[in-house]
Amino acid sequence: MDAILVVNAGSSSLKFQIFSVFQGTLTRQVRGQLDGIGQRPRLRASDAKGSPLIEMTFQREEVPDLPAAIDRTRNWLRSLEGFSLLAIGHRVVHGGPDYAAPTVIDHALLDKLATYAELAPLHQPNNLLPIRLAMDINPDVPQIACFDTAFHRNHPQLADCYALPLAFHAEGIRRYGFHGLSYEFVAGRLRELMPERAAGRVIIAHLGSGASMCALLNGRSMESTMGFTALDGLPMGTRPGQLDPGVVLHLIMQKGMSAEAVSKLLYHEAGLKGLSGISNDMRDLLASKDPRAAFAIDHFVYRCALNIGLLAAAVGGLDALVFTAGIGENAPELRERIVRRMAWLGAELDPEANQAGSLLISTPASQVGLYVVPTDEELMIAGHTLRLITATP
Ligand code: ADP
Image (cartoon, rainbow, N blue to C red):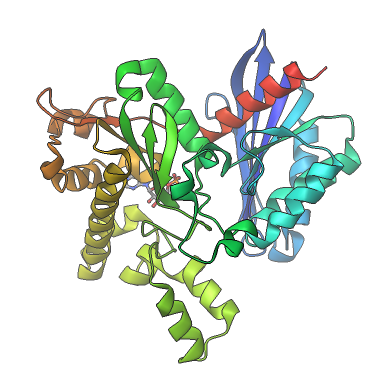
């Protein structure tokens, strides 16, 4: 069967999915990942029904880095029978200032995207590596780059800049915003399910291990809690979210920390993990009786509520709030606590619907429609990929 491979390559994991294509319809057939790269490498994949296809662990030195992970994964993918690869869709974190839509990749684009590595040094090189390898090995298979920044690229100029001398903006130091593929998917679902709400003032809360919120007007991104990098905004699993830049200066200039040490702190040791000293995983914190876990959750809820106020101001009020991603979709207690802090906006939760994780979780009297919409970034990438290869002569 004709198939599209979706690839999401990070520093410690390589995620992949295969979608079959039949008469323009995409159906997920395989979902898998090789994670723990360089630590405890493990390749897992399951079929459309969730039944395991492979579960394999490796010695650390067998899969020390991403190239090795790509090699292992590719070998396993090639052993699958029955798929005829039409194209590969990639998640690419940064489309820089120029790319506001998914784009067919050629050598010139790849070189251009490599220049954005400076803007996202932890993600971009990893995202581009499998593209480069596939280009060498399978030059005839089209590849499509789908950018996390693209959905926000048409946000207003006001939302795009920092109050720095404008020359910095010109060189690319801007508020890009991320999680765009998730927002695009959820906004599309909202348009299908409740077009009237989708046409209004909406906040989508993507609360996963990375977390951000996006304010939309008529389905378009107007403002995001993330900016130049995916560090800003909400506290996350291991990232602090909003932080006075003076703290960074202090760490470097007064405490003598190296830039690398600060980067490690901000990307890997802060957020829920740093604050609780227990875990970056919300499930562990919810299960813990340790007061530090409770405090980290309180902080997360508080910052979510603050940022809802901020984004509501960006779009002049709020018609709907949509929860999505790991925490947003699966943690009714967190949704309940966030909404409790939104009483001033007239938001009112239906506790039973919330507990059940229904699509609509607000009461009829609520002035803000509250929703839970599962995200699907991979399907979004597969959809873009199919659309572009169908449009390409
Ligand atoms: P990512 O895709 O960025 O890795 P996810 O969207 O999968 O992240 O979200 C991961 C987060 O969701 C983790 O903090 C995890 O604890 C949390 N999560 C997943 N399921 C639940 C649940 N049932 N209750 C609370 N938190 C959950």
